[in-house]
Amino acid sequence: MKKWKMAPRPKRLKQSKTLHAHKSILQICAPMLAALFDSGEAVTTVVISDIKPNYFQYMLWYVYGGSVSEADLKAHAKGIIDAADKYSIVNLKLEAEAAYIDSATIAMDTAKDHLLYADAKNLALLKEVVLDFIAENSVEASQKIPFSDIPGHLIRDLLIAFGRSQQRDDANEEDSDQFSVMRVSDLRRMLDEKGLDVDGSREAMIEALKNSAEEAN
Image (cartoon, rainbow, N blue to C red):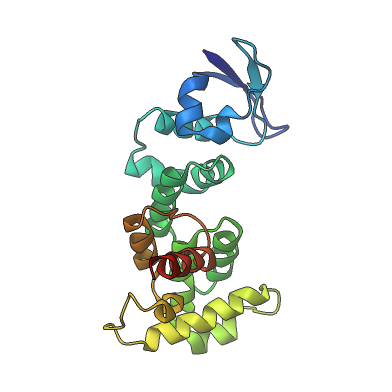
């Protein structure tokens, strides 16, 4: 049995919390967590200083087969996303992303922050929601959202959002040329059906689908 000791962040967390985990379970369900134990000793203590204890506990509970309630996901979405992203707990990250979208207010004064966060954490669905909002309100957005300090690759994504909003719904999903304007939910569904990784940026998902299509041919 492995013991986790979680140290507080200076001036932010006043208490530490000790959690316990089995390395054998982590090796199967959370390899990046298991990699923290490299001493070979039967019992080790690892100090986690960059994630709040309650967020880490949600993640560990999930790894052991538990579920995080919708209310908790919505209340702590960002903290759970950060933890799950750091340790590649993909399904938890996607669940928290969905909760974040449900609970977040996408408006002119918040769109830029949501977009930059989505880009930083590879939250493709959140990014799509924000870009669609901007595309659908383009005139107002051009006046109220400062685009000068937004990374250039996001401008390309915004142009794709404009194109997607004009595309017909009956586009052939099996045509690899259509991948670039497909919605994230459809890309993830196709990846899952093919047994491929559903996490990552839109570009990574499209590349994986194109490679799969080429291999099939």
